[in-house]
Amino acid sequence: MAARPPGGGGSAEPEAIEFGIAALDARIEESDLSFPATSREIVRALDHPEIPYDSKGRTIDLATALEEVPKSKFENETELLDSLYPVFDEARRGGRGFLDGLRNALPF
View 1 (spheres, rainbow, N blue to C red):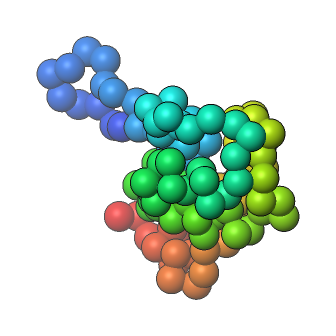
View 2 (view 1 turned 60 degrees about the horizontal axis):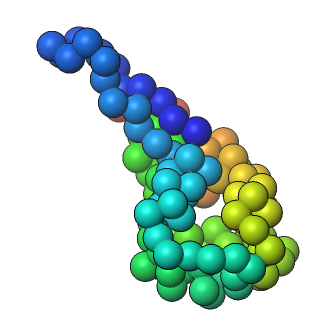
C-alpha cells in the first residue's frame, strides 16, 4: 500500500509513501533474495528490516511479522507477500497493542 503525504508545498506531484506490502516488495526488489526461501533467509537477505505498516510511518520488525505467519518457507515472492498481508493489515487496524490504539485515536 502507499499513501501520498499532504500537499501544500511548491511541488506539483508529492512523493508516495510506501508501507506494508508495497514497502516490503520494494525492499525485496532491491535485494539479492531468491526463492524458495525460509523466513530466516529472507530476514538475513533484507538485513533485518523494520517495515512501515501504515502511512504514519509506524514499523514492524520483519522477523516479528514472519513469526505470526504459520509457514516458514516460501516458494516465491507472491506466496510471501500474500502470507504477510494479514499481519500488516492487523497492525494497521490497531492490533499492535493498547498504546498503538491510543496513538491511532489521537489527531497528531
